[in-house]
Every structure is written in C-alpha cells, then in structure tokens.
Image 1 (tube, one colour):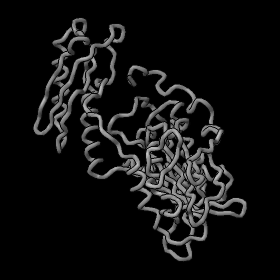
Image 2 (cartoon, one colour; image 1 turned 45 degrees about the vertical axis):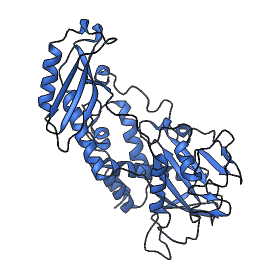
Image 3 (tube, rainbow, N blue to C red; image 1 turned 30 degrees about the vertical axis):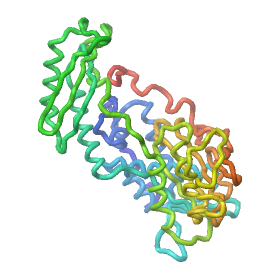
Image 4 (cartoon, rainbow, N blue to C red; image 1 turned 90 degrees about the vertical axis):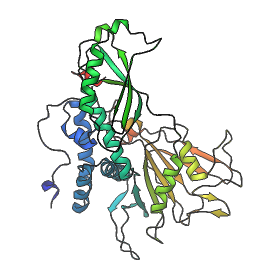
Length: 391
C-alpha cells in the first residue's frame, strides 16, 4: 500500500452538524461529524501527523485505533502520534516497531540522532471496563435530561445514586419539564433555597434544583443541566496511576542496546507536578526541593536506585488536539540508569537530580511553536452561530 492509497483518518464528507459534543459521544465521533473551520484544524493536524508514519502496517493500526468506538484506544493512538511527531520535529530518524535481537517483542519507536539512539515505549493509562460502563450509563442519563424543553430554567444535579442499569431518563425528563412549568422564574430566590425535585426509579435516585435563567436569555434552547454538584470531594492518587502504568512497561523488553524511555500520557490538573514528584521521588517536596534518606519513589535514591533499565520518562500531560496550548511535556531523567538518557531535546522542561536536590531545566520553546502551529490554536471560534447551545 502506497501513501497515496491510504484512507485518511477522518472521513472526506460535507459536515453540517455544528452542535457541541454530547456526553455519550466518543472523541473521534465528535471530531468526525462536527462542522466549522475551527474543528477542521484538529482533523487536519491528526491526518498530517498520521501521514508521517511511513510504515503502512503501523499507519493502519494507528488509524483503526483512532476511529475505534473507545476513547481509551483513541487517547492511546493520539499519544503515540504526538510522541512520534515530537521526535521527528526534534530531528530524530524514527523507526516504528523496531526489531530486537533478544526478543520477539517490539518497542513503539527507535529514534536516532547524531549517531545516538534510544527506544521509546508509549502508554496512556485508561480506565477499567467496569468504570467505562458506569461512565457510559451516567453520560446517557445526562444526555437524555439535557434535551428537556425548559425555556425559563436550567437545573442543577445536587445528589445522585447511580444504578446498575440504564434509568428511565426519558420519563424523568418529562417530570422535570412538568415540575419547572409550575414555577415562576421571577419568584425563585437562590439566596434562600432553590426549589428541588427528588426522583427515584429502581436503584437510581437523584435530587435536582431549579436555576432561573436571566430574562434576556429566556426562551432559547440550551443544555438543561448547568450545575453538577453531586460528587463529593475525593482524593485522587495520580502517583498511583503513574506507578501502575510504568510497572507494566519497564521489564517488557529486557536488556537493550540503547537507552529505554517510557512516554507516559496522563490527564492531571496539578500545576505544581505533585503527582509526578510523588511517583518518581516518593515524597511531597517542600520549598527547598530536598530529598531525605527515607524518600525515594520509582527512581529510588543513590545507593538504592530502582528500575535502572529505564533511562527516563517522557510525561505528556493533558493532550487534546484542540487544546495543544495546554499540553505539558516534561522529561524526567533517571540519574541512576544503566544507560544514561541522551539529550532528548524535545519540547518541555527537563527534571534532573544532583544527588540531594531536584531541579528543573526550563524549556523556553512553547508547544505551539515547536509544532509550527498558530496562536491561538485552533484559529477561529468553535461555536460561531450557536453560542447558546454550548452554554
């Protein structure tokens, strides 16, 4: 199969549906159907990155996973494409799924530059099938309710007990419409107590509150749910996510003839890199960024290094094709690795360790500049003619 014979990732069709993404809609399905010049840019970018994968078998695999009805596969394939393109733009010659002399397995990439090479294995942790089913039930529940015709109100989801099967959401939507029709938006005082509706069906239960719409915005179609307040505060073990993912990969290929790098895709919202520091160094660093003898995470500490077959971890955080300005890339070098990490002069900060202290070597190059993309990205407006529908 020649490159000219390849099918593009996205369908070559005329698009007329410019509505926002539905709760139950997969990322690829949304990107493939949404109209507008704004959304054409991420589609073109992904197709362009995929075209740079010269191996036809690898291209077919990437394309199939991007188009799969499973966001876990889409995210994993997009992460690989991003890393592949990043290596190319950094000047590396990249071989996809290189052969190994002592193993029948194949890392994702072998990248070579200035007579120095490294192996790269990509992983983007997803969620379990059980969690996926729960998410899907919740998203279907939300999608049905969001279609409620309530011109003078929006609603807040205050409490929710989710059942084991799909709820009777269509009936609930009619109950919400009838309930809100009995209320006068000018008489609802949110400062005292918003009116509420309690609903139960089988093993589902929910409590909703009525939120009056400003007079100037009444009568317009919009998503019914404006507030999600049903989830209690909970701790998130980001360090555990990182460690579990690395555990899967670091012993996969045995001894290699070049440094081995794991490229990890995550979706954390911690600007202080708390989860990453916990995972790699095993402590909650203070203002001095110093490590004490009892610390030590995935990398360990001098005299007791761990996982030394890994030269470093390339962490790609918050990757989305329409939000590339928000992507955070960091290179975490393992100071005790059997084979030291070479320059790996990709975009992103480099995190190093001098024996007692962790330091950050900042990279002044922005992600958008590195990939040759304009600011803002994507150019234009996502919802130029239906702004209220996105509220």
